[in-house]
Image (cartoon, rainbow, N blue to C red):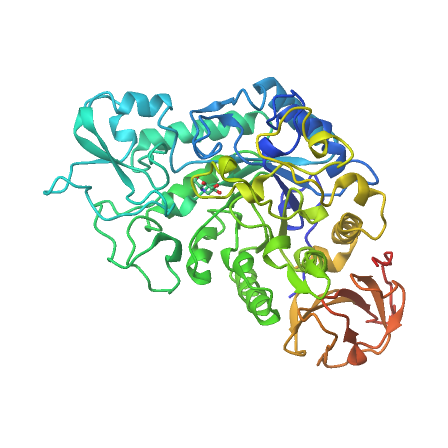
Length: 560
Ligand code: NOJ
């Protein structure tokens, strides 16, 4: 293994080496002063992300939904796919964001929510008017079961919602909703739905966006006969076994033809990408969603972000992801997003002096940026933002995900941490990490991310598919990234005490050079990898001297 990907802007496979930064628009920056984040706020902060020497240095931004929405599911209930919600601004603001991001070398990805619309979408308002309306069959309707109850036993993905069916009194049928009752599922078996949603994609692709993050694509295929699930099926545990076909409300084989359709639309524009949030938990089943290179370009790895902070868990993910590459797909790495507790909180550990959220966040930064694949960062991850405990009156989300969606912490010297001049829609904590302080500190997590992303953009080993697991102490996950005559060795100590790495590799040259360490190891130091003792929670990148050209290390500064 080990070929080159020229991922620079202007080539068609830029996404392979990219770092994508997810923005939750309600929480990024409020320029209008109403307490909600907006597109103008994002524009004002683009310099944090790209285009300047001290920018974070990501390649693309992905915006969670910005479309007109009643916000029952905070934008994932779309009432008009071709309008920007008034909280975020206007279509003109979207155009300005796209062009200003592009002028900084940042690509722009939008969320595309194909499985359902809002119940306030005109299509659904028409569909529920009568059984004979021409929009009726755009959604999934069914008669009550003989006892008058829901047509089958399917459950909503949100545990609090219960049944995935709601009875529509005036027309006497149930409609399907895989999430809340205000999010009716579209009927993708209907060619008119496919055509309309393809039009939506073109509307935005024509405006210059660089692709979509596709919401819940595994839900687009469901059993045509609406048969019951096996009684013990709980949505969130689906398909943990390769042959697990006991659930019929998702991952139906029909999904693949639908995805090929989305891909055809995408491929009719140059250099665009489709990234799918495929909630199928078996890694081999999930791999099907790459198709034969004709479905999704990228698939999120639910296994990776569900891992406990243990070397063997990430080592297993590394092997699964390598299998994705061998099968012709391309892996993704994310540890946080708007549906998950932030990993700085999840992986925090108790020490003698309190809760440490920083050490593992640093090690995770090394992991996220040095494995072969596309990296995804969630806003605030670059400064180590944690979940924010919220008083009950603020808990609004139907699935309780508010703590990981609180406003971006720009500057604690300003009101609402610089997020908004008004009362923010979700509260900001009294103190915590912020961009202003970390920008000025060469040893901050933000500085570490800047350095790692520079390395990721420029080091040939990190722009290739080369990967080999290295045998080590069980608490250490180490891998090599070889390309041509150069090799990086990455080692992460998952223990909170020092560990002899016990690296076992053939022909290990004793003169490795430290490129970056999250510990106290100065860059440029020469060390013998076979003698390596890692500090607690240390993430380390070494350049191994290979080939007759010897070491050609890229040096970065120390981070402690
Ligand atoms: C997955 C999204 O990430 C989540 O936030 C949303 O609630 C559901 N899909 C429904 O769209």
